[in-house]
Length: 269
Image 1: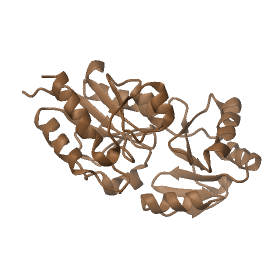
Image 2: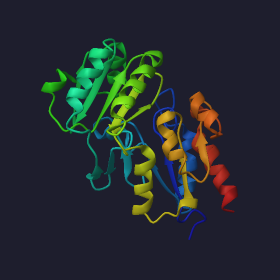
Image 3: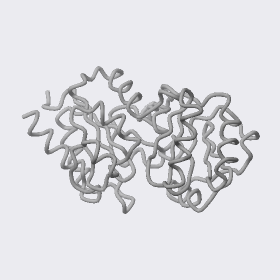
C-alpha cells in the first residue's frame, strides 16, 4: 500500500510535462518515480493526435490511457488500442470551406485516422509540423477523406478570435473551438474536451473526484482543470489560466511535476 493509492495525476504535454527545450526535465522524472512508487497513477491529456504523440509516449511511464486530440480520443498505449473516439459532423467540410472563405488568411490542419491534411497552409502550419514531426497532404476540404477527428485553425490570435466567435455563433451546437496557444484554434466535436475525456479515464480507473489532479498551461486545459481537486498550472501558462484561478507553480522548464508531487506528498501524509 502506498500513500498515493487511488490518486490519478493528469498532465498536459507541451509546455507542461515537456518543456520549452523539447525535453522532460529530470525533476519531473524523479517526482513521477516517487509518485508511482507510492501507488499513484500518471497519464497525459494532449492536443496531439496519436500519430504525433506516439514517438513521445514512452518518455515517462504511463499508468493509464492517454487523452489525445484535445479531447476527442482515448488511447491505451500499453495495448495499442483506441478505446474511444469522436468525430466532427458530416457538415465539417462545407463548414470549414465557409470559414476560410470568410477568413482567407487562416490556415487549417485536418486529422483523419493517421493522416494529416491541410488547406491554405501558412508559416504557422509549417512550424507546427516541424515541431510535431509530421507531414501533411494539401487538399481542398471537399476532397479530404472523412470523418475528421479534429481540426486546427492557424493564425495570430487577434485574427483567430473573430473566427472563433463567428464559428460558435453559427455552429456552437456542432463544435468546440478552444485555443491551445496563441496560434492554434482547436476544433473538436461538441462535448469533446480534455475535461470530458479525463473524466472518462478517471471513471475507467475508479478514481474518486477528490483524488483527480490535473495540470495544464492553456485555454484548452481549463475544462480538465475544472475537474481537478487542485487545478495546477506552470508559471508559463496563458493569462486566461491565471485569471481563471489555477494554482500557479514553477515554470515548465523547472519541472512543474516536481512541485505538484511535493504538494501531494504533504496532502496525503
